[in-house]
Structure formats: structure tokens, C-alpha cells
Length: 281
Image (tube, rainbow, N blue to C red):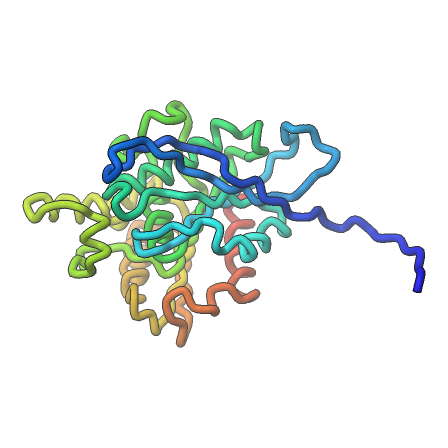
């Protein structure tokens, strides 16, 4: 069979620009410097030059992994949904396990935002329209990113002079008050502190303690059957956001477990997209 057809160009294909080094950090176990990569998912414009002319709202995606692993590309197919709806997505690596204890990973995600702003022309980033989304440990880091704007203790010298704040936060089943999970070995390894300084570290690591008038709007999701991070963690964060009159929405998904399929259904992604459009567009 042979046919001659015309195809209307309704959408651009989605492309991946992998392995963009956004930071050089100290590996506490190896005692050496290691690169942290960002992988950019965006629409392909075949007629564009190497420099991207069109600036896009950008979603920073932070994968979870119990503060022990960071498979930053794992949810690439799901992130393509947001590219098809007008966003680009920056999927990042951050320090985990023996690579660095708190606040290393918080510093990493804030460095990633500064990198995006510092390289806005090169990568087509609308610097005024950056949001963050994370799942589990990544949700925690997203919450820290959204509540610690302007706090020098979490900033580094890399890409200094650029702001690390975000316009909106999507927190998927992330912990908040780590003091309630301090018996979890993964949390202990993440905090990496002794008993004498534990209380101070627990306060510094709690996004609830950092909520202020600078805090970004929040969208939270959690499952009622989460056996890894109890949904009460998101409830505590939501209640604190409401107390401070921060725009926030909390979706408690009945029957959903930790990182279960409910979080990637069309209905869920539409809620996320509506939230992004509200605060970025």
C-alpha cells in the first residue's frame, strides 16, 4: 500500500539533553570532588540555533531513594507529560549515602536552581518561572527548597549572585519532621550527626521550622496506606503552611501506598499541571 498524506505539526518531539554538569561537590567518603549532573527534557525545535531563543517555564524534578540512591532518569517517561504541556523538566542528581550528609543534598538542589538561572539563555529557562517537584526523599528536598529562600546556611559559592528560590512546590509523599522518623537507619545516615547536636540538626532539617512569608505555594500528595512515610508527615506540613497562610493544597489518596501507581495517573498529573499553570503562567 502506498499513500500520500499531509501531517499537521501540532507538537514538537521531546528530546533529552543528558549529563549537564551543574555542580562540582566534595564526596565525603572518597575525599574527592565529584560532578553532579542535570538531564534536561524539553521540546525539540529543529530550526533553532545552539542557543535556545524561547524561554520556557522549568520544572526541577528531584527523584527519591531513601537518601541512599539517586536514579535521576527513572521517571523520564512521566516527566515527558509536562514537556508536552509547555514546560521543560530538569532532572537532577544530588549527594546521597556516603557522598555527603545533611545539609549537602539541600545545598545541591539549591545549586541546581542557581545554575538554571545562571544559564537561562543557554538552556532556554524563564528565570521567573521555576518550580520544583520531588517524590519521597525528593519531596522532602523540594519542601526544603520551597521554605528556605534566602537562608545563607544552605547556599554555596557555586553560581553565586543568582537566586535559589522557586515559585511553586509539588511534594509527593515526602517526609517533613524527621524527628518522628529518627529511628529509621536511613534518616540517621542522612543526618549524620551525634546525639549532642541531634536536636539542633533536627530543627534545621525540618521544613516546617523554615516556613515564612517567603515560602512558595505548595501542592502535597500522600497515600493513606503509605508504610514508608506516614501520611501524617504531609498533614503536619500542610497544617503548618495553612497556619502561616501559605497557599497550599493537600490531596490524600485513598488506598495509595508509597510511590504507588496512583501518583502517575492522568488525573493526578492534571492536578499538578493545573497547579503549575496557576503559579507559573
